[in-house]
Amino acid sequence: MPDWDSVLVLETVGEELVALMRELFAIPRSLTGDGVRDTLAVLGRDVPIEIVETPSGTKVFDWVVPREWNLRAAWIEGPRGERIVDAADSPLHVLGYSLPVDGVMSLDELRGHIFTHPEDPDLVPYRTSYWEEQWGFCMSRRLLDALEEGAYRVVIDADLEDGSLTSGELTIPGATDAEFLISTYVCHPALANDNLSGVVLLWALARALAGRQLMHTYRLLWSPGTLGPLCWLARNRDRLDRVRHGLVVSCVGDPGPLRYKRSRRGDTAIDRAASYVLAGEPGSLVTEWKPSGGDERQFCSPGFDLPVGTLSRTPHGLFPEYHSSADDLTLVTPEALVSSLRTALAIVDVVETNARYLNLSPYGEPQLGRRGLYQSVPDGTNPEAALLWVLNLSDGSHDLLEIAERSGLPFEAVRQAAATLEGHDLLEQAPTDEI
Picture 1 (cartoon, rainbow, N blue to C red):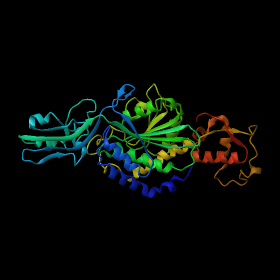
Picture 2 (cartoon, rainbow, N blue to C red):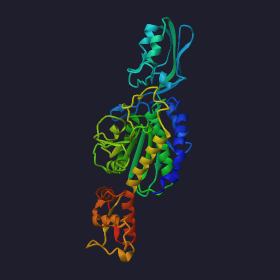
Picture 3 (cartoon, rainbow, N blue to C red):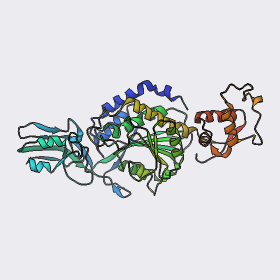
Picture 4 (cartoon, rainbow, N blue to C red):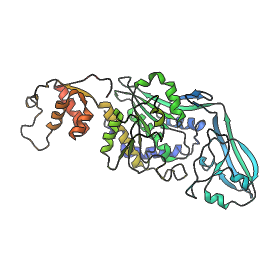
């Protein structure tokens, strides 16, 4: 695998990711519509994303793809002709999937269509109504309480009609057809950590992996939450047995500790690799599977039960800015984004290079000295430790990650020891269908 620090120039990639988030922040994304297409078009300037459209009305397991929603403008005009709220200032001001409306009403009638944050009177909440036809606006409780009696003009200039649900896919071929799926959701407007951070992290992963010699084939998926993964699963149902590893990436830009949520199975290769990598990150957390959260719920539903875990920092619902106007670009930091990216690449690195080996000289220790692999005068560094651990446990049933875990040695040291021993005809890689 390459030196990721040199590939990504990590001194500048954090600011690059923040700049990309700034460009994408104001695009009015939703479950469907041109906002998703515009977002994928920006990402597609640098990575060859394939656009996939699933028509409205398509039955996807127990769901049906809804009509497509596109918002052009929306505002509330007060009794004196002043703009109270305007979607041009933030797409959060409009209830997602609002029906079009243009009318004049009293304050009492308007209040029935206003959503406020349940806890903080100064925040604008993020609300949607994908499955119930209605219209509405979102504003701070403080602003709502300050409105005076009178006639208010309400305008939502939007279309809700047959169209499609848009996803973006990128395939990076490897030496085998064993697949590593990495997915993020792309449906939230004007929310930075949840989840522009995941959107741009996948973009960075695509750039880092492109053109590399890889063992696995990588499939990167940018899609609207819940329905996007379900559409992908339906399209790829006949090839899901190729998915050997998977990650859902979300909420990776805030300064909170890194977290990995295990797959439904709990003991898959991605679970082991991610747990090992995060063990080297101070303060990081590894949590057990639970059937709530993000798109991992679809990939790990019992009918599929794919080996897909979740990489995040502070996950949705656990930071106070969640689903509100406070989840803005000040919440994410270049340092957190770079840390998340390095961690994702470290997990990829372990998955890519993990293997089982067979000791070709298993009867007693092979003589390392005559092969130049043994220090005749020890200097305290004990470079033979990794060699001896790899030789002893290379019986075809222990992989390199297990050797690193049992020995307490860095995975890189164990991997290098295996390469050295293989180069001296003392090891050969054991055949395996999956690590």
